[in-house]
Image (cartoon, rainbow, N blue to C red; front, top):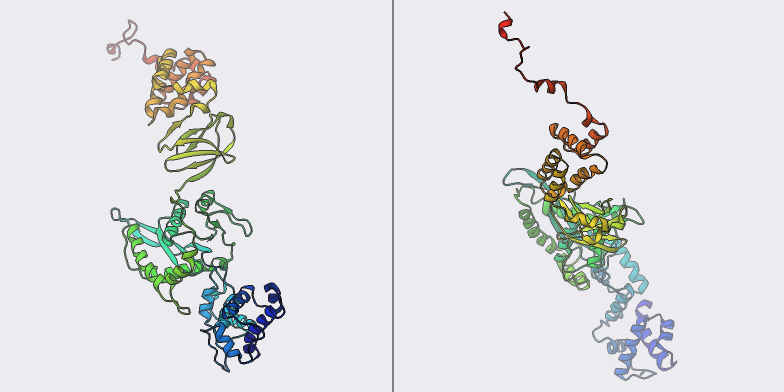
Length: 514
C-alpha cells in the first residue's frame, strides 16, 4: 500500500516544496528523486489549474490525481496493474527511452495501482529472462545491421550446358526489428559481398550506425578479437555510406546472434520450401527468394505483438540515415610495387607513375572505367581503365632521356633492325607480328637492338640467324649465344657436305660397282 500512496504524496510534496519552501526544480529533484521533466510538468499543470499552497482540505488524493491526470485510472484496488512487458521491451529499443521514463508514464496512467520503480525493474528483468536467449541482447533502433552467409547453398542449372553451380545465400538482419533481407549470389568473393551490402541498403531504404559481419575473408583481412583489420574495399564502402564496421569477435557467436537466427529462419522458411524446385538462372532464384521474403517479414511474432515489417516501420526506419546520392561502385584496391620502368601492372595492362617512385609500394584503385594510383594517401596518377594487354604511359611521368621512347613505332623499330642486318629484321618482325598488340613487343625489341652497344652488328646478325633457324624467341637466348660465342663457330660439317657439288671427274659412277 505504501507504494500506492507515495505517488499522490509526491505530488503534494512537489507543490509544498515549490510554493512553501521556495525550492528550485533541481533542489526538488534532489529531495524527491523525481525527474526534472516530471517536476516541470507538474508545476506547469499546477499553474494552469491556479493552485496555491496550502491545498484545500476538501481536495483528497483521488481528486488531486484527477486534476493532474484526467485520463488516469484512480480507482482504489488491492492489486497492482501489471505493465504490458512486450510493449515495454519494444519501447526500450527506441533511442533515448529508459526504464525510468517508462515507469513514470506507467505511474501517471495508474497512480493508485502502480509498482514501485525497483519492483518495476525487477519484474521486467524476470520477464526478459524467460524469453528466448536472443532477446537478452538489447539492440537500439537504427543501430546495427547483422550480415552473414547461410551455410546452405542453392543449385542453379545452366540451360545451355546443363552444368550445376552452387549459389551462395547472403542474409542481413536489422537489429531492433529483426527485419530480414536475403539474396543469392554466385560466390562469397569481395565484389559479390560488397554488392550485396549495396542492395541491402536499398532494400531497407537507409543505412544503420554500424554493420556487424562475421570474420569473412572478403570483409576482414585479419581477424582479431580486439583490432580486426578490414579489407580496404570494405572500408571504402563503409566510408561511402557513413557507417562503422564492427566485426564479431572470433569464436563469439553471441556477437552476431541476430545473423545466426536470421540465417536459420531463411534456411527453414525459404530454402527448405525451395528444395524441390529447379532453377535455371540466378535471377529466377532471387525472384522466388524475394517473394518468400515478404512472407517472412509479415509473419507474426510468437511471443511479441506485430511482425518484422511493423516493428521496422515503427522503430528502425525513422532512425536510419539517408542513402547517398549515388550507390557505391566496386573499386578493386591492391598494393603494387613500382617496377624499374616506372609502371605497375593490373589485369595484364601497364600503367605509368612518376619515375621517382621506382621501387616504392603504391595503392592501386581499379574501377570499371578508371585506374587511380595513390602514394601515402596522395593521388599520383589517374588513367582510363584498359581491359586489354598493353601500356599506358603519361609523358610527364618519364625521365627526360626516356621521353623520346614514347615515339617508337613498329616501322621505326624495323628500320633500325634493317640497318643492323636481315636476320635481325626477321627476328624483330616476328616479335611484332606474334603479339596481339605490337606495343607488347617494344621492350624486347629495344632490348635486342640495344645489344649493338656491346656487340658488333655482324655478330648480332649471326646470333639472330641462329635464333631464327632454331625458333628461339626469347631475348635471353640471343644473349646466351653471344656470351658463349656460338656465333663464331663454323657451320656444322653435315650442313657443309650437303652444299658440295655432286658432279666431279673423280666421282665414280654406278658402272664401277658391279
